[in-house]
Amino acid sequence: MSDLNWDPFDIEIDANPHPTWKRMRDEAPTYYNDHYDFYALSRHADVETVHRDVKGFSSAHGTVLELMGPAPIGSRQMIFLDPPDHGSLRSLVSRAFTPRRIAELEPEVRRICAELLDAQRDGAGFDYLADFGSIVPSKVISALLGVPESDREEVRSHIDQVFHIEPGVGMINDTSFGAQIWLHEYLGVQLAERRLHPRDDMLTALVQAEMSEGGEVRRLTEQEASEFANLLISAGTETTSRVLGWAAVLLAAHPEQRADLVAHPGVIPNATEELLRYEAPSPVQGRFSMRDSEFHEVAVPAGSRVLLLTGSAGRDERKYDDPDRFDVRREFDTHVSFGHGIHFCIGASLARLETRVALEETFKRFPTWDFDEASAKRLHTSTVRGWARVPIHI
Image (cartoon, rainbow, N blue to C red; front, side, top):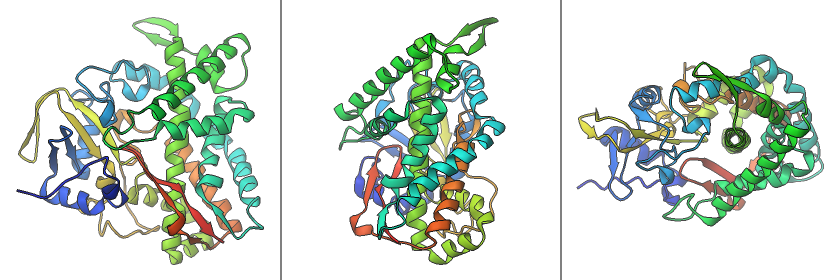
């Protein structure tokens, strides 16, 4: 009997899942966990295939293991919708993430980064994540939506709590539920205020937006607008924070590559893609199988929970040469860390901009640093992986 075991809630495995994921790719590319009753696909080709197969693998039953079940979860959030509902809503939101609008955000992103980093110049060190990396994306997406500046830190704190997990139950816990309720109620109040007093922000755009559905034009319902805003502010904060945390950790561990980026900032966009490939901030996505299928001679019945291990796919030697080597100048075509197909991360261009500018501004002030791993703290959830605290010495 094989001793291979991958438990998405096991924090010891999650601290370094890559050896386990490699064994899964080699020994059990269609892995079944009988304790939690799910299948997991770990190879790049399989993850990419299922991301594209929206008829065979549904998002409507949830995309986080502990939320997934035989019935659709009933959410109007875009990530939990299948076609045709998904398409009309995505088209609406994509208007906020046009290349022009994202490019226009760069001066504000740079101002925020400079302000936060300048505040650390006279010290011996700081928490790169808590004092910088998690604040930048929160401030940017909050500004884009129109969250009042006085509320932004409280909003960010509740977003962190949404991803709180407890052993055996994951995100099904009072802390996470309480944070979700708070965010829903807060955004509901903000949206109601925009209906009465429109402003030049995305919250106003959501309540005023019109979409075509079944030949008729309508506006978003209150639930749709609230869930849209919740998705944008949560996803727009959490994953970019994890990327920046990994950047501080990995570049401290590879000082010669950090020096290369300091000397050649034009390489930073490629380094961002390598960061995403090497340590995916959201390494697990769930799908619900709508029909019987088979992968590597293992049957996956209809009605199964299937986890796509994008974190493993980024280290698949069938796709990448020497995949466990971190290389900011690596040449490769694609990765699946932003998803693939119709659910490709709609904020990917914003995340790339924020990461590039954050690293550019960091290198201007702090070309070297040491990572204090003994004082660091990891973040463990069933879907997001990274750091909660990243103390550095400068």
